[in-house]
Image (cartoon, rainbow, N blue to C red; front, side, top):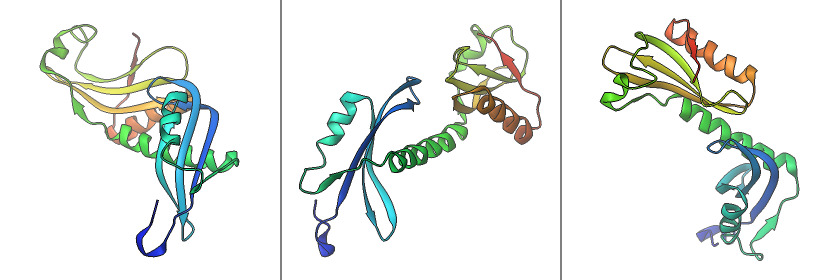
Length: 170
């Protein structure tokens, strides 16, 4: 892991149990590989779950990679990644396929703005959807670990779009 002019970079490896994986919504092991340079941390890669973490671990050799035991640093990396994912989810603006507006659960739903959640227990995926007469748009998406996060997302959408969102039960 040479860094051209400066020689060898010093890489760090760390893992922590019990962090939320945003796709499966399971609390699993999170691992990251990074280096620090000029008081700036650069994340080389990250993974959720034991199989992905083992694959990531092979990128760092014992001679150039130090195992980090500081849970605070690993959690900071996790939070940084999750914040970037949340920003990306919030700007998810995407049109659903044409016929979606004519299928369940949307075919008998009035034109307007809606909130759907993936399940009734937390954590969950939250979707802010705008239904037009012949089109359906995913305006925003979010992963919510608790009711406060869910309500904050709904309120943010209400303020931005000047609407009063309805929670569509599935």
